[in-house]
Amino acid sequence: MLDQITYNRTDKRYEWTDPQSGEILTAPSKQKHMLFKTAVAMLDPDLYQVAVNMIDQHPQLERVVWKAVELVTENRVDVFDIPTGNILAMVDSSDGYGRYAVSFDDGYHTCQCEHWTSFSAPLIESGARVCKHVAAVWLWQMTRQDNF
Image 1: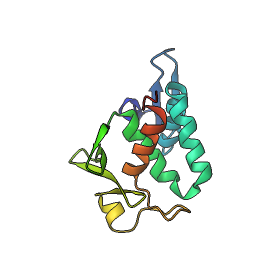
Image 2: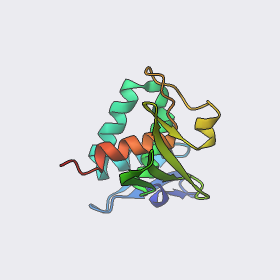
Image 3: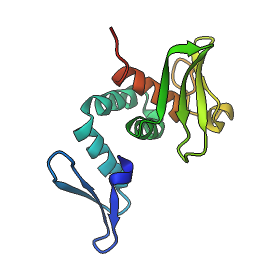
Image 4: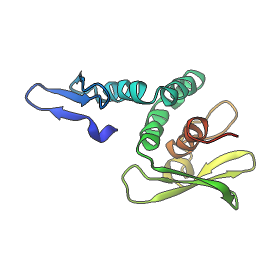
C-alpha cells in the first residue's frame, strides 16, 4: 500500500489513488504518513481501528504500530497455524533483507530483531517490549486470524 503512494515533484505533494473509487487523495510534502493512515482507514478499517486503539492504550508505541501496519498491509507477516516450538510467526524485515522469528517465551512475545534484542524497543505497562515485528503479529492476530 505504501508503495502506491507517489511523490509529485512538480506540485510538491504525495498522491494516492483509491483503487475502489479512483479518487486521488493528496498530502503535502513531508506528510506521507498522514496519507498512509488515510489509505489504511479507507481500505482496511478494521486494521486501522485496531491500530488506533493500540496507540490509544499505549501512546509510546505509535511509531512502532504504524510500521507494523505497513508490514501487515504488505503481507509480510507469516503466522503459523501450529507454532513451531515457541515460534509463532516469521516477519519480514522492513528493508527486505531478512526475516525475524517472533516467539512467545515466559509470557512475553520476543523477537530476534536488533530493536528488540538491544532493549531499545518501547516498553508497555506489563513490562513487555514491543518492536514493529511483535506489533505486526498482534495486529495480524486481531484482524486477520480466523477465530472459529
